Structures are given as structure tokens and as C-alpha cells.
View 1 (cartoon, helix red, strand yellow):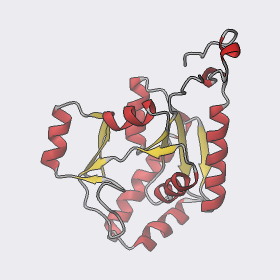
View 2 (cartoon, rainbow, N blue to C red):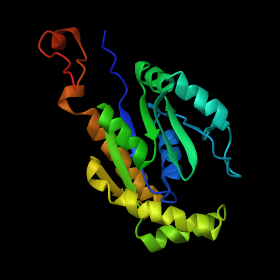
View 3 (tube, rainbow, N blue to C red):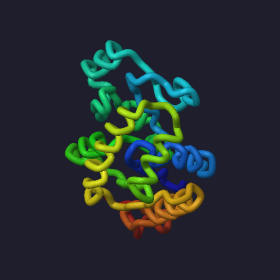
Length: 210
């Protein structure tokens, strides 16, 4: 019997407005072995977002309770709202053999790195800061002051690009999806992730530890 490979975590970060959520959603629709970890947040949902699909939208009181019970792999306060990644959600997806997208901000990714969390860290960039501002403005979900704050944060986040394994500029969604798909296929072929496909190969090749 072929051994089951544990799912690969893909940590994907990007400045707000880059198009990260759109790209991740298309990847989920096209790659059968890929799932996403749904984060918890205290921010209100946008008009197109749904509870349990985009985020688990919870009160600050409920979020703090989860912090106390150590339910989060990581959590952070971003733009005056809390975001957290569920430990149980990640572990279950990986143990079932699925690859998992962990869609988090730069601050959250930094926490995972410091914890020694093993995964593939990918950073999405906008074509330019000017284009990023245009995208934020077109969303029509935030005030001019809020957009200004997000742009200030974006510049700080982009400066952290060296902490990621891959950098992909989101010029156009289909192109970005293609590049991310290629990265995911290449990661599966790395030596330390190889799982023998037959008993006779198992006698020669031992799955490597990361």
C-alpha cells in the first residue's frame, strides 16, 4: 500500500488589496487536493463575504476566549481587528492528506516562522503602490482615511519580502494562479517529500524528514 503523504502548508501573504483572496479561491476551485484554513476575525464581513466560507466572524469576547484556550496556531491584531489561525483546522486538513492554504498577513507569517512552523512561504505583490491604491479604492468598502492607513501598512509589509521563499507579482489573476500552481507542483516533487509508490521501492527509499 502506498504511504499517505501529509499535506503541504502554503503560507500566502500580501498587502490588503493585492488580490490574494481572489487568487486563493480560484486555486481551491481548480486543485482537488487543496483546501484552505478559514481564519477567525473580529472585523465585520464585507458585502460579498460569508461566515464559515471567507472567515469565521466572531466577537472580540469570543476571540479572546479562544486565545485563552490556546486554540490558535497564531493570532495578530491588524488594522485594529483581530485575526487568528485555528490549530485544529490546519492539523485535520494535513492529516487527511490535503495541502492547505494558510492565508495570513505578514505579521502572522512572521509568528509562524519564529515558531519554526514548516511550510512554503509565498508573498504576493501588487504591480505598483499606485495600482494597489486603485484596487483598494475600487472596492468601495473603506473610507479614504482607512485606505491611507492600509497603504502605510502595505509599504511596511512589502519591506518584509525577503522572509518568503517565493515572490509573485499579481499583474493578472490567471497568470498569478498559473505561477502558484507551478510552485505547488514543484514543491510536491522535492526529495524530502517523496513517498514510495510500491513495496519494492520502500525497501530502498525511506521518506525523509523535513
